[in-house]
Image 1 (cartoon, rainbow, N blue to C red):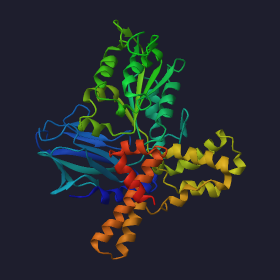
Image 2 (image 1 turned 90 degrees about the vertical axis):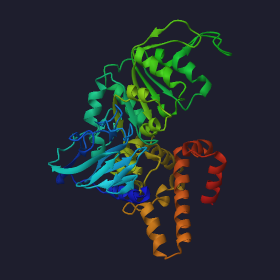
Image 3 (image 1 turned 135 degrees about the vertical axis):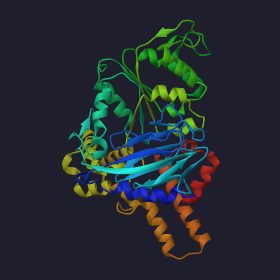
Image 4 (image 1 turned 60 degrees about the vertical axis):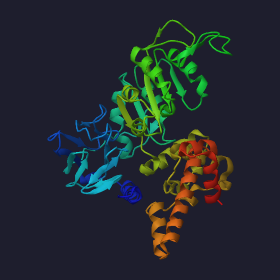
Amino acid sequence: MVSSVSHAIDFERTVMQPHDADSGECIFVATVVDGPDAGASVTVDGSQPSCLLVGQGPACALRLTDREVSRRHIALEPRGSMLHVRDLGSTNGTYLDKVKIIEAELSGGEVVRIGSTRLRIERRLEPAAPPPKLGAFGRVLGASPEMRRLYPLCARLAQSSIPVLIEGETGTGKELLAESLHEEGPRAAASFVVFDCTAVPANLVESELFGHERGAFTGAVTSRRGVFEQADGGTLLIDEIGELDITLQPKLLRALERSEVRRVGGDRPMKFDVRVLSATRRNLDHEVQAGRFRDDLFHRLAVARIELPPLRRRRGDIPRLARAIWGSSGGANADLSETLLRQWSDYAWPGNVRELRNAIVRRLALGELAPCPIAAAAPSDEPLLHGVLEGVLAQNLPFATARQRVLEAFERGYVERTLAEHGGNVLRAAAASGVARRHFQRVKSRSLK
């Protein structure tokens, strides 16, 4: 089996390299050369806001009838001059020649086998059309190619009322993008309501979503409108939709399909006119595959999809973002040195724009006493994982010792990043990691001595 660790290194090398706009755009074509759907193909290029799926399911760009292929079998995504292929937890696996893979970077000419279907990957180089020379969409800032590629799609989606799923890591600005889609569209004068699935106790989620009548449950002393009623005529953002309990997902689906809600304890439906946006840091393709998220609800929410890139893949935007945050936080432009901007630009920012904002606010409050995040970062031209592996291998240690050193480095980096994403909250970090709090605490104590 080809391990995902080795391909993680390739991935870091790819995304850290600046894109050469003059070299042209790589377009990949995946064609079925053997199997029930021979002749079918899909084109993958940089114009898509997220990866393309291959499988039996209706969400797939290349939909196959091969019964040995999973509903969502693989994801295809262009990254620079390579095509990134990722298995989505399929039942029968994904093979490159005779090797089973989890992830791989392809350059063209390879044959990928899924089920009884063989896909030939071909690459074409076409003159690159320069991205629009825009530096922002609404209040979303960024002039990097990764961001400018999204703006034309965002502008079109803002003028429509179709549901949009916004994906991205914690802190990438998903809520800000949702608000910008609202403000740049025809519903801008109406309400923009946010419902965070992680901020409401599980037993109150249904009431918050759909509202409740007086006496519907203990403590319901008055009637209350749900978020759909509050957003009527405007836009509703359902944040962290991947955290919604699966028992409530059919009720949400029914509300979306009928454009009506029934309050808890109520006996009459109420119509609403709401544009629904949703956001998630989870990979919903994986969640659907694992049975934790309903396929039909996913299709209803993801009529269009936008994936926000992490800050480490758009380092060129860091100085502009830093200046904007510095100024809006009360800092004087003269006090923001180029040296500090360079240090920030070299940092990987696992917490993305939110972590950058926190670092700037800390700097304004504490001055030189504020810790500099660059001290914990790997140099920008040598990804951390690659550096750890090379350092351990250079010591010619026994296999067991070398493996332990790499594992310790992984645990330390994983714990630091997960804690940073959840504001140091061990309980939330453990839940996001999929392990018990006690085990996470043990790993934390062992790794962060």
